[in-house]
Image: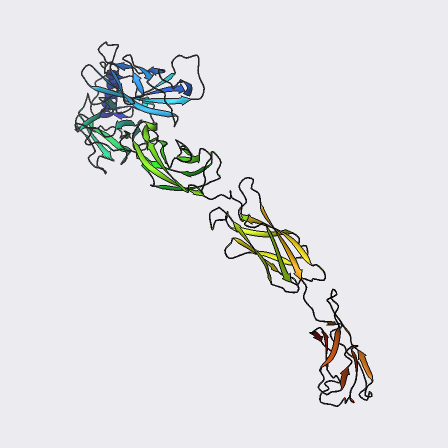
Length: 592
């Protein structure tokens, strides 16, 4: 093949394009022959463990670290003290672990022979099926093709299309990597080295843009434009910003060579640097005194600025003190996860104690980290556990007949429930002895008395006595089995001397005006409703404007006293009106 000349075409490519293509092929081959680079064999290790195996002493699996010096033992350090890593890389549980979110992520560090620290992320996932065939649980090695090493001195290569990575509109998208928050430096602190696979053939210049670079918070990340080393310049705070999106570029000096932009996502790894905070203090709640065991009546809540998906942001609630400790010290319990407060024992009595104060803690790291203290003030509300009682169970009264609206009796009661509450508010009811509805009972102004009144006229001649049964209840139903108090009221009807009654009340007769004197016009007799008494009825003229009439006192016979005149001015529409009185021992009734 003849030597190519600048500007000559080979297929669809000019000479510079062919050179670039060859450069990348050569670098790819060179990378395969590169010397050993210390580090973990993968970026992320996933241990899948059945929940029954999350006990002390359980071996989860191994992390593999290549020190490139022939050593088979390495010093490892776990960021989560519940997990220990042996020198051969075996991860062992130091105590019982609960995965509330179904997983837990922590980091493991190792140091190579030069003293450099390398870090790998370990994820423990809970599975639902127990594989008894395997002594060690499943370990998944997740590595990124563009990473030569997942440790702190890792090199991040611009990917080729052959790696199978997803390509976005602006460039390559690679898996994110994690950086712990609150690092103490010294700063600037090395994060990763970015390299182009053409850097051995041509001089490349590197740059970054995006959040934390040229966008706020500016200057958090910098890059050495010649080496491609990416630095963080200050401690990161996950609670202020949990991730950063950077775009890295690489261009050749003096040549038209440029890598496609590569997106770098930096996730800030959470540390337990915040303590829980109660959302209010105190919390106020009400509990009915008759509540059953298990009744949840209020909830306390706390927040934590740390990552809620890690144990740093998962806290446990605990009641540490009950005041007063009467009638027993553990009347209440709190759900350690939700903060719901429930009744734990019987014995609440509003009539004895109306308020309790609970001292409650919320502790992160599932109860092993920072703790905060709050209070819950519980008011015991009234339940209708005391039935109202009549102060006197029997009453005997006398009332006159025919007297509507008269008060018959006042029935006083007592109630030990809270005054003014529905459990104390009282109502009365006549349950027997008044089929015809002569009486009504109402609640008096003080609420603690029932007032019986007459709503229909009583008639001594028909019923001389009533025996009323009255019960007293509350507006709220009784709690449990309580006896209803009953009072008996005997009402004796007093006889009243009632006046004689004419029937009909008005009597109309037709007589000629020339009826002779002493002639009989009509006999108009009255009757006495007091059938139990022997009384004499007498009659007399009550009103006779013209003086035309007379009445026989004993018989009620009305006769002509003087000649009547139809044309008299006292006659209206041909009618003359007179009033006759009927009297019995002083009482009278009149009409004519």
